[in-house]
Every structure is written in C-alpha cells, then in structure tokens.
Image 1 (cartoon, helix red, strand yellow):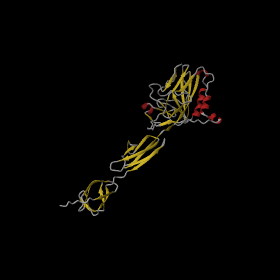
Image 2: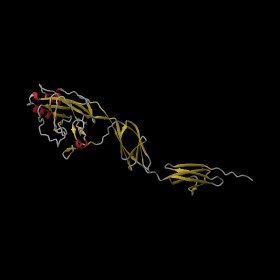
Image 3: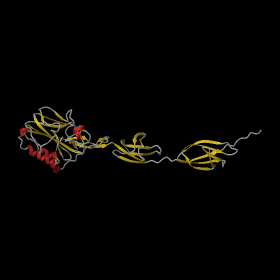
Length: 364
C-alpha cells in the first residue's frame, strides 16, 4: 500500500478504493484485460471441527442476547450474494435508535479493516431510522471487489455512547481505512472481550456475509514481436499497430496474424486462440531479394538474347543476378521475326519459352 504525504493515493487522488475482496486497500492498479466472465463460487461444506474454528463461528459468539435496540447491516446485492472481481459494492446500515456505529470487514485473507468510521466519515454517530450507505453520493472513493475468492464478513457493532472498539487508537489522517488486525480470528476474540463489559442495553450487533469470485476470461491475447521491430501487425486483415504489440480481447477461435514491413517479405500465421490464453509469436522478417533469374529457351535455338538493350548470349540461356523489377527481353535470330516482351523479375526464377515466327518473303 502506497502512501504519499500521509494520504492514501487512490482514495485521495483518484477516488477508487479497492476492497481486498471487498475490503479497502488503496493501491494503483495496472491496466487489465476486462474481457472476462463470472465463474461460479463453490463453497465446500466445513467439518464440525472446521466450522467451530471459523471466523463466522467466532463472530456468532459476539451476540447480545438482550439488546434494547436493533442495528442492521447489508450489501447492495443482499446477504450471501456473489461479487466478482471488478464489481463495485455498497454497504448499507440502519439502526432504530440513535447510536455510534463501527463496521469491521473480515477478508478472505484473514485481515480485518475498519471501514466505518473512516478518513472521510470520522463521525460515526447515526440517527434512528435513517438508512446510511458507504460510499455515499459525493464520496471520493469506491469499494471495488478484487480477489482472492472466498467468503467475506462485515460485522456491525452499535453502542449508545461513543466507544473505541479497537485495540489501538486510530489516526485517520494516516489511515483512510485502518488495518485493525492481520488475523481475523484473533481480532474476533479480542472484540468479544471488548464488548463483554458493555451493558446489554447499551449495544447491539449484526453480521453480513457475501462471497467473492474471480472472473473467468472469455477472450485471449496475442503477443507479436518481430525482427526487425516496428513492423505492422494485422489480425484477420485489421490493422492493430506495430511490433512489439499485444492484442487484447481476441475471441476464441481461428485467427490469422500478418506482419509486414517495407523492404521485407510478409510474414503470416494462422492459429487457434483459447479463452484465457496468451499466445507468443515471433516474426523473423526476410529482406526482399535484390536479384532474380531468368531461363530463356527458344525454338529454334541460338537466338541472341538482349535484356534492356544489353546482349547476354544465345538461347538456351540462364541469366543470373537480374535486378528485381520490370525488364525488356528481346530475341533476335536471322530469318525470324524479332521477339520483344516486358517481364517482371521477382524472387522466383522465371522460365521463358519463345517460339520464334519465321519471316515470310514474297516473290516478285
């Protein structure tokens, strides 16, 4: 968690609050590929021994058997709902009596944060009958759910007088959403000890839980590098940028990558992209050849061959190191018509077969 001038960077500067699951950790996120879909949350049943030792079980011990008033806490999707990584979350609370409320968030990692009161709402007095929510309209933060997956619990403790319910004093100018403990089980036991001396008519409690699940990718990525670099990259004929290039949000299926650069032969590859897969491609571009070759034969043989006006020999003839491009080919043989043709010389060798036409002579 990064701090700057005693302020939490995301909370103050950007106003985006990341819950660890739903719990506040103010940190700057890297850019992410958001092409994901929810996956189901599977909660394995606990054995009696595991259930007895769970945080939820310990928190059930912190119960006031005879409260004189009632407090409720819930989340926008409702008790036991599932939130996926990237979802925003809102916490609601209400009491039927004026009181002072404290909210603790027990994360799947086992940490405990105090989310109310906090840096932005240091006064935790709430009025009877009024529904409150955090973040409230105009707040400079958001609760954005992130992993890991698991069960998250919010515990509300309301008292009729202002009381400190934490082992240490909190300085909000240094901690926007204070980390109370790195062990949820240990703090749950501490909290039980803290509230035990309070008369039952002076406090009330409530518990809300929900599940956090990671999102399952529905698209893949293709990373394209090349030698030389800064070559153009095309995905299924659509220009995507220049190498090195990562193409995000590639749908599952067959795709064709093409890499081009002036002065080099095109490079292409057809591939299959799976959901959540990142494919690495390296395109080694080959320079265009500077020369080609021509093999010329004629009927009849021994025709003189000229390229661009320069005599090269007689047929059959192979001419090497002909510059790539257009050239004029001329074949001359006595008693035959002169053959003239423009041809393009490329990478592949050219075979040119010419049948010379005899000259017709008229008798007088």
